[in-house]
Image (tube, protein in one colour):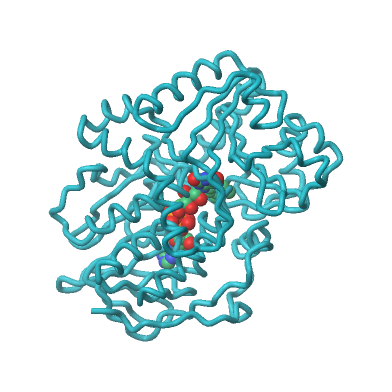
Length: 445
Ligand SMILES: Cc1cc2nc3c(=O)[nH]c(=O)nc-3n(C[C@H](O)[C@H](O)[C@H](O)COP(=O)(O)OP(=O)(O)OC[C@H]3O[C@@H](n4cnc5c(N)ncnc54)[C@H](O)[C@@H]3O)c2cc1C
C-alpha cells in the first residue's frame, strides 16, 4: 500500500537550477530566516502509490498528512522543493475569515453547505495551530489575533458589519473603537477596526517545511524536482510522467493553486494568478518597535487593494500589497508600499527595507476556493484568493478523504464543476487594468 518511501537528505546545496522563479523564492525574508532545508530527491524511474498529490504547499501536504494518518499510501510530487509556491513566501498571516460573510455563504450554497463553510472557516485557525502543536512544528506560531483597521467612514461601516456577522456566527470577533485600534496597531491612522481572536501569525516557510517533515515521518514520500509533466488515465489508474520516470497511482489530487500548469486541460484557466509583493525591515530597534503591533497580531487595512502587515519573531516589520507581474520585484516597485508603512508608522521613516520578494496568489471569479472532481479518481483543490494559510491547510485536511471516493458528497464544502475563465489570457490584461483602477479609487478615497 505504501509507496517506495524516500527519506529527505539534509544537503540543500544539491538543489535546483537557478532561474528567476527560484531566485525569487530564495530572496524572501523567510528563506533567509529558516534553517537549511532538507532536500527531497526526484521521483525515481517507476513509483507505484495509492494516492499521488501534485503540489507540496499547505493544501497538498495537509491532504497527505490526513491520508497517511488513515493508512493510505501517498507520494507528493513537487516541481521544485516543498514550499516553493505561495506557501513558502506568503505573509504568514492566519486569517480565519472569508470575503463572503456567513449570510452570503448560506445564500450562495444553501443552508447546510453554507453553514459548513462558515464552520470550516471559523475552525480554520484552530486547525493550523493544532497541527503545529500536535506535530511540534517549529514555526514561530503566535496566536494573539488578526486585526483589520480603516481610516475611512465607508470602511468603518463595512468592518462593523463584518465584525458583527462573524461574531453572530460564533467567531471570537471584537469591535475596536479609535483608542482600541490605536493601542493594538500602534498607528494613529485608523479610526476603528475589529479583532478576530482566532487568528495570528506563523513563519510560513518553516510551517510548510514542518508539514513536509510530518509527511515523511508518517511514511509518505515527497519528491522534489519532480514536475508532473503529463497525466493520463490508464485502466482504472493514473499515470503521471516526471522528468525521470512514471508514477502510477489509483488516485490523484492536484493542489497547485496559482502555480497550476497545463497538466489538466482547462484547470490553469480557472484561476487568475496575481502577484503579491512583500518587503521587510531588519529587526527594529526597541524604541522604534515598541509601539508597532506590540501584541504580535497580524493586520490588514480595508482598502480594495489591501495592505497586510505584521512583525516576525525577531521583531522585523513585514508588509505586502498587490505587486507587478514579476518574480523578483524591482526596487522601484517597493516605493509605494514602503510609503504606506511609513505613513502608518512615522517611526519607520528612516528604517530601511532590505528584503523584497513576491509570489503568486490564485484568485477565482466567485472569491471562493474550489474543489473539483475532474475525472474518476482525479480531484483538484485550489483558488485560495490570498487567504490560504488557514484555508488551504483546512481544505487539504477536510477534502482529502472526499478525494478517495468519487461518490462521497462533502457536507461542509461544495463540489463544483470546473469553469475555465473565458478568454483567460485576455482577462489577465483586464485584471491588470482593474488593479490600476482600484489603486486610483483607493487613492481618491
Ligand atoms: C506574497 C503572498 C502573500 C500571501 N500572504 C498570505 C497571508 O498572509 N495569509 C494567507 O492566509 N495567505 C496568504 N497568501 C496566500 C497563500 O500563501 C496561499 O493561498 C497558499 O499558500 C496556497 O497553498 P497551496 O498549497 O494551495 O499552493 P502553493 O503553496 O502555491 O503550492 C502549489 C505547489 O504546486 C507546485 N506545482 C505546480 N504545478 C506542478 C506540477 N505540474 N508538478 C509538480 N508540482 C507542481 C508548485 O511548485 C507549488 O509549490 C499569500 C500569497 C502570496 C503569494
